[in-house]
Image (tube, rainbow, N blue to C red; front, side, top):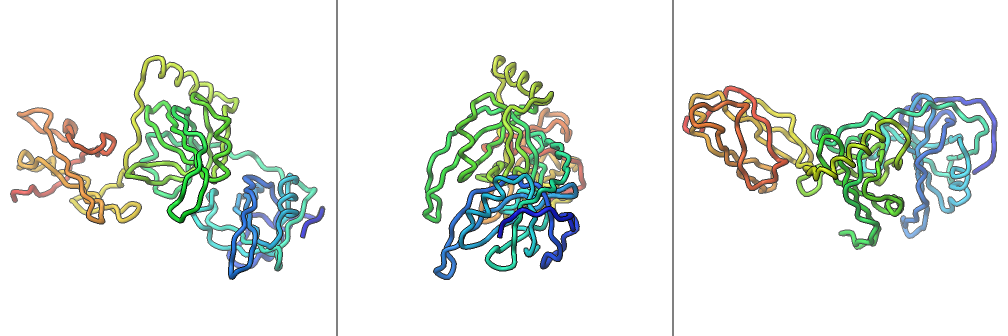
Length: 346
């Protein structure tokens, strides 16, 4: 159902509760996705999503129906819409690009409706709270972050075959910032189309990138993110100047490694992501520390890595002067902290 209405706003997004929507909500349409078709019980249906924003919060809205083209056009051509008759449920973190733990599921073939609204709410643009690339290792997996970085490498969209046998386009970029670290960003499906307009040296402002882990390294999933190219502000100018100077001086950018564990004192384990178990601390304050020369990191599922410890001097071993020598990636190094532990000879 689609029409134009000018009724008073009855509810804010922040006031919605789990369950059936008992009030209509008006907001700005952002991050509108294309219509997708799917089959369920041998019946073809369609779905698209967008993010609804008002001055109280933002929320992902998924719209379902057999023919959604006219509804999608309303969302695409309207500054604001009013939705009603949907179900508020816990959001799926795989698809939700907002920080709202809830989302609205709306079936226009049932009780759901979307109307064009002439009453456009005033919404202050949310300022980006950028996370430095070097700090991404300290962010929990599946959390959303804002990132500002210069494109140091670019893989244009190309078609790949997924494990499920589906062909889909994917684009990848490598971003760097003043921390001299780099992170890989992946754009799947229609989100990869925007990459054809990017070049090495461009500055990307990415909102709501999802922190993920792939092949033992921190990466960013940006399929549902809002991306701005070379926006006109001081941070972008400073980053552009820094990147230009960094390339002229042949600065090397170190890729991010695995997410850093929060640490468990006394040799206990810390779980992170998919059954990640890492023994972090070393018995650096123990009398028999010089007898400890290696440590094993257990990543679960039979995957282990051996780290050999090399003291920085022969006469004295200090926690702040311990070097790591290992075949593992340099970015996998972990800091040492004093604690009372047992050496292997005790």
